[in-house]
Image 1 (cartoon, rainbow, N blue to C red):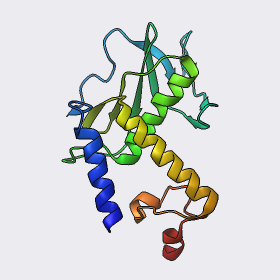
Image 2: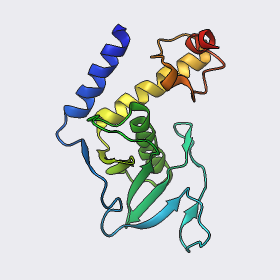
Image 3: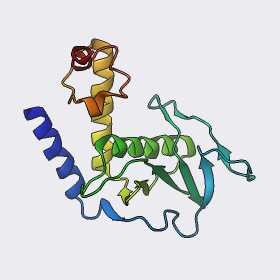
Length: 183
């Protein structure tokens, strides 16, 4: 119980300690002005030249991979956008897993294309979050990544378990004691 409380406090501190690092707004226009489509993971019949389609993006430096829904580009500036099928409702913050996913895309894009991403968006059905790529978010991401790798390697750790958080987790049939108890 204390671990969950501490995690919530840390997340709020990370996000609210830097003004406007995460900004919630009603869904409007998700594409920033002047940016053009550079990458998409979406199925599309018509393919445009100079657009990368459905490729897994892999960072050798950090050994992480992913497929953002969209990346837009203007000159050497990249802008990832991740679409979520759920709603956020009255929550003032995006879901932590979604936030870490977007930060992972920041890092992968920087490693692949050599330019630091300034910000990106998480788009839920009812709200949109503009997320700035801050040092604090990156530091937290690398801590989470390190903890996950340690848990996978040793089978030991302090996960924050719940059915909702665990139902799609890759650890549910391996090192996770919580999920084994549910089965």
